[in-house]
Amino acid sequence: MAGPLYRQIARDLRRKISSGEWQQGSQLPTEDALMKRYRASRNTVRSALRELSNWGLVETLHGKGTFVTEDVPPIVTTLTTDPKTGGGGGEGRVYTAEVAASGREATTSDTVVGVQKANPAVADALRIPEGSDVIFRHQERLIDGRPWSLQTSFYPRSLADRAPGLLDTGDISDGAVTYLRSLGIEQAGYRDSIEVRKPSPTETEFFGLPSDGRVEITEIYRVGFDQYHNRVRLTITVYRADRNRFVINVGKVPISEGLLPASGGGNEQDDSSGTV
Amino acid sequence: MAGPLYRQIARDLRRKISSGEWQQGSQLPTEDALMKRYRASRNTVRSALRELSNWGLVETLHGKGTFVTEDVPPIVTTLTTDPKTGGGGGEGRVYTAEVAASGREATTSDTVVGVQKANPAVADALRIPEGSDVIFRHQERLIDGRPWSLQTSFYPRSLADRAPGLLDTGDISDGAVTYLRSLGIEQAGYRDSIEVRKPSPTETEFFGLPSDGRVEITEIYRVGFDQYHNRVRLTITVYRADRNRFVINVGKVPISEGLLPASGGGNEQDDSSGTV
DNA sequence: CCGTATTTGTTCGTATGTATT
DNA sequence: CAATACATACGAACAAATACG
Image (cartoon, rainbow over all chains, first blue to last red; front, side, top):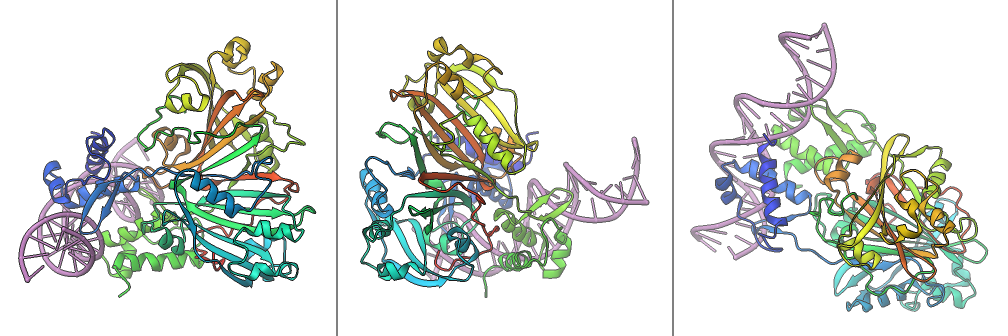
């Protein structure tokens, strides 16, 4: 009854975690201890632990032990700019301001700039021929010193004639959008496209993700348009999917105070909202 | 060298998949065949296959075999309403129209309506006391007969005095937003909050997800405000994270034609965009 | 429909390697 | 260096789902 043994063990351990019997961050019994407690073989116990790990409930560290995963409050990012206050300022500034408001400190690595050939995705987003030159500006962004997001912007190479600063590393730290506006290239609007996918090796390393594909990445494509509907830039930003939340305001909405919709937190709610 | 054997096997299989040597949907060699090919034990081969499965590259079916995962083009949903054309029409209509535009057919289950006590998340979103009565309206939404999303809207119980139709199952199929507007309750704006999390058991079953927590869910909280900044409704919609994409338009953007940013597809791009 | 072969799922026991304490 | 704890790997047996004659 009740299915395979390893699932029964997993269920029991799960219960002990979600009931609070085992606190966040605390160490689970060793595999050896669990073998004895459940009279199961090592492989079976490990299957149970792997299941919990897949669901993000525990984390296993080689040589140290298995620990109950600790909740990390998500970073909240607003994707829409307030037409009244913001006026469409540079994203870099907006992001850091928003993070600072939550009492954390946002920093960025040095900007890496360069020119490369447009791959299909970039070419399509900017409506330029595949393989034509594009300027890229890349940054690693941290919060309180911990990896937060990776961002790369692409501009058509031809823009550098009017906006040579795009190829400077530090000068336009105020935000490329602001810089371009000073040159008469207004960002009249933008389109974001959000998707969730598995991390690339680079992303896995930057974010310090587990080597199995357990943790996903949220990728945001932002295509910026000027007043003539030309595609001026493509910005790709990636985040850890499980530690970031994105907010979109449409129409007349009050200024956000508390922000967070009081998320329950873990996975254990089990449809606590009734019919949700 | 090159790490554990099961990873070497996994890498080799991965290469055969991403190189196209093994087509989408085709069956991999049986575990028995892989044992012989790599001179490894069955458990080791299974470790390798599990790794590929975790990364979403293959799917294993009990008694049948292991198959290369087939790409499913994502459903695209626009979260912002065009102030010119849409004017903030009912979401239900907008969604189905958008899906229809892509040549697919959107249908919904019967609406389940009822009254329940507000849980903390709902109470916070609507700014009402926890435990007070709320009306819920729940729907399962399908595309071409396949599960697509689950949606539940919550309204303060008190709204039913002015809008009794909220408690009818079918009558306001045009969309609750339209219905409320006909009663003078305008949705002046809304705030979406997007997060990614593991599926609940109900969601796992509805979407037909694998029982390990491999596939994630995108959850969108939408809080609607009336012209007086009152919180009129909370709509929670959940989607398969890996088969849906969300678009947000801000400011002046051209009408989307092609939509998709020509995503490369799989995970195997391996930072093909260079510095991304 | 039945029975058999095929294929993956579960469980055990055991041994050895590697990281941490 | 030794003890502890998780990681990898092998071999074996039986169970469960599926395919096929």
